Image 1 (cartoon, rainbow, N blue to C red):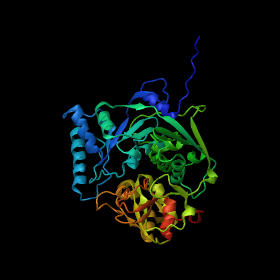
Image 2: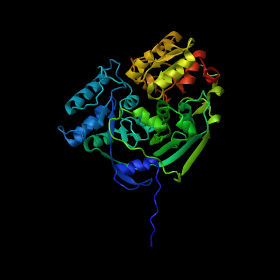
Image 3: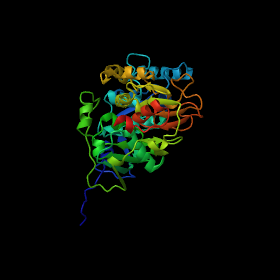
Image 4: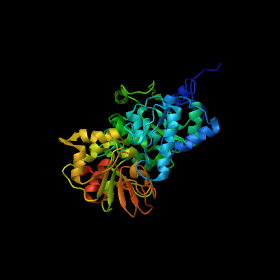
Length: 438
């Protein structure tokens, strides 16, 4: 007689099973899943909308107006005619489809960087599937959701049907034990993972990150960690939802949600443990996010520019960290501070450190403040804010340092945490922040 064994599942497998109406799924299974929210922006939105109309008809309506989120954020403060045309396409489509969640760039409804805005507006929710036409959509996995980037074709299909097919990813487990040093941030944790896996070691795999160090992180730090899963090829990253998560989404959830946890005795094919106390402030050297080295070993590296911003490093927590180091100091190199969203920009004026507004601390330190957007994180047109247009050596809180990523192919980009970037802006060379933080 055959006995039925209870199939153990990870958190992500449980979400994919639930959204595809199955009792259980295994890595490698092909499933059709119902999508909770689809986000697009000014870079991929026009292509997605064109494909949607081509395949579903000029008069077709999106599968659910309330599940489509349109957030222009990439090339918006530029006179470039193609960028402006893209914004107009988003306006026209959102109006025609009567989309309630269109956050127009040049209006009081403007939000800023999509991944941070999705969190602020309550679209990042446990147990849901959030797709975006942007590889850093994996940021939302910080909320215990399955969040991943898709191409225009997949997005157009979702617009028409509300479904998408997936291969269930294998899960890699990372556990951070103990406590992290004060000068180490979430950016350092994910750089460590990327350094260990390499830029393709996580390809089409789910990264599940947990342990006492992670439980102690606030939501914005968890977002920074999940944000860079794609930099090692990850399909997504996920952190189990807990009381920190639920407190964050209280009163702003845009749909219903369900909290899932991985089965405690699940047999992961790959599991790695880290000792929190041994973690270092890290830097990813040009031209790859996996080219990591502890900051203290790179103290000889001269820099010409520092950049604090983007979906990875432009959240309020990132600026609080930078302000701790910059208060009462003067930067030695050109330093740019670019809030991710209009809410973060407003918070920079309200939030204080040692009795001074963060914005004032940055201005007094000699930093240049940018308007909330993706800005120089991905280069863009000539008039994009803070564009590195020559052989700059930039230390940045952003997520990619490929040649040309921030503008010029001659620029060298070093990726680091807000602490490390702020400390380096004061010295003009790569600087371990421990002496400033502890």
